[in-house]
Image (cartoon, rainbow, N blue to C red; front, side, top):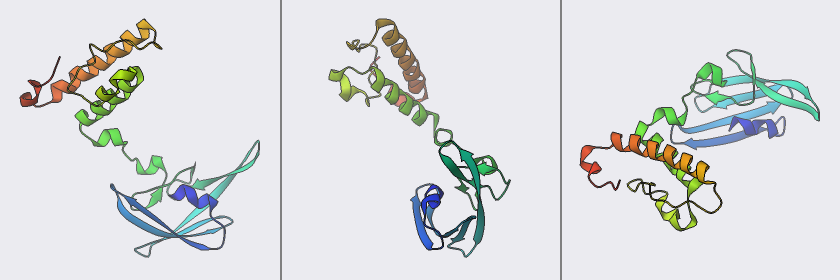
Length: 172
């Protein structure tokens, strides 16, 4: 959301809204001038964020100056205050969920890479193993076998995390 502030016209007040399932609703008023931004949050807190300019081949680039550490950064994050990634230290999405959800997303992504056109419906079926999938015509045998072995290793780890009552339904 703050990324878009660099493109806003100067000397006008703009309202930016963000509805995120992690932080909830955030509504801020932004006023941009030549040397930075002034941000008003809903709880009437004001933040001054300065711009830093660097020369590049095609002209100049504007950066934000982190209010906490004074480093230049391309993105500012909000966690009670506006700051750069190094100051706030946010967690990645894969660090917040259960290991099983992380494995499921990795399995689906890897399956899409080796999926044969006739087996597209099996990409999301995590109960079915990819052991018997045929090699697609556009893949080399060694690469396909290596990818399939990696997927099967992820599938085995995924199955070990499942409750025992579900394991009897899995086709090996």
